[in-house]
Image (cartoon, rainbow, N blue to C red; front, top):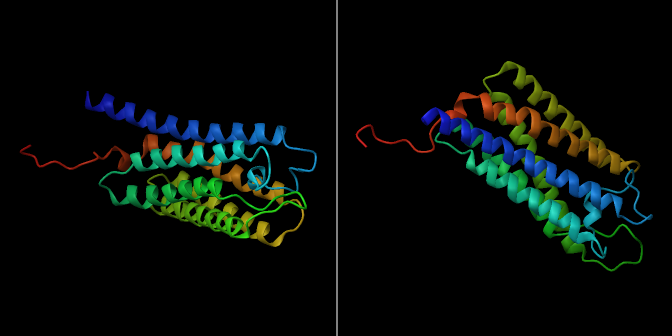
Length: 216
């Protein structure tokens, strides 16, 4: 019974990550499909699908907030009395929180002549930066604590790709839409395939949530 329950919990956590990731991917696709001709996905970012003053921004806001809530709940549900679990899940929850908050505070408009709040746009940028930093920390934690050597290399590859693409994004003025989507691609691929593999096979996730005294 204990083994069956443990496997059931692992499957639930795995499904939660897939649902959260699939949810935001679908929202991005729909939001991009209904975007006006002035929005160019190669030049405009995903964040601008929720830009201030844009009539359909609510859709991408739902995507950011929903993804942030679902992933953070899943990450926190993975916490166990094991140091490796804390090192992995807390930064991932912060990453999810940053994505969610970047949906509450919207970026500047992608169309000219639209009034907007520069303070709100700065908050959006700050939370997006927080999400990026937290995700890099998550990858680093997995790289050092994962029991699988194969996954250690995959964590390292994802970390190098994330940092490299982020640097290119910060320095580029052209094709920033493609560059930012590449960041999302790395993150979503890692969550679905690498992170979920660790959830299902790494022994540290088999630790009980609470340690009980043998007499109880």
